[in-house]
Image (cartoon, rainbow, N blue to C red; front, side, top):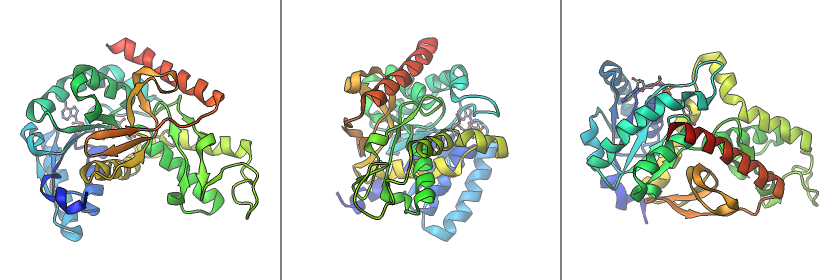
Length: 320
Ligand SMILES: NC(=O)c1ccc[n+]([C@@H]2O[C@H](COP(=O)([O-])OP(=O)(O)OC[C@H]3O[C@@H](n4cnc5c(N)ncnc54)[C@H](O)[C@@H]3O)[C@@H](O)[C@H]2O)c1
């Protein structure tokens, strides 16, 4: 499908005008991804101020209309992005936010679908996997339309670190962090490649990939997994990275790009996982998750993935 076919039906509503919601809006505006962005927040003064600031940015980049919104804006929005709720504070894990943010999600997701049963709901609020599951359990008929940003950001962090280490453009690196968007996540090294060459495997060539030892891979993964803690310690919140990540997910949906992204979605038996939402690479298009990929992973990776799922399941059981 060509991009112009979706031109008149690509409005995005963002709920939450805080650091994350405004950064996602900023990415959408700068990349001219959508015709219109509506922003909703309980704090109307904040929403108004963010909208004014974004309108000024839009004057440099394209013709995106940015406005203060209400739930009625969901009615003609292709995507509603949920960013409202409590954010991690220094020393908190994402799972610590679960009770407070579950209550918010239970209140707002019905309002979205009441306006527009066809909307794609992109969950960004943490703990994103648990909240994606909570929203799906409220609306099982819309399961594929409800996805979480998952480990799209975490995987970008890993690709950035690998790119710096190996002096390769991160966009040429295929490497995924999967599982929980949080402490139990894991890297799928068995599926990580550059130019078709597996990372850390001996091969004939320039020596770029085989120079990465297991120890170094572990250090790079630890740095990617712990990046949010380091950023929050330094500036209280992370937002530019998720702003760019959510824009990429929104673009895949709005223009039916069928991009492979590690978004959080319902597991349906792959690798022995079900009744949980977590990230594995999936095909993302106009209908949300429009295809599933079952990577050929090692037994050790499968075991770790199952432990990550168990961590999430335990958290889900506390709130449902
Ligand atoms: N998924 C990811 O990769 C990722 C990355 C970074 C942050 N986050 C998460 O995003 C969320 C937002 O973070 P932030 O830094 O923007 O927080 P923030 O405190 O800056 O903004 C949250 C906003 O939500 C609003 N809000 C709260 N309840 C609301 C409701 N019922 N309806 C409408 N608005 C409401 C608040 O007024 C506030 O403006 C957090 O849960 C954070 O952990 C996720």
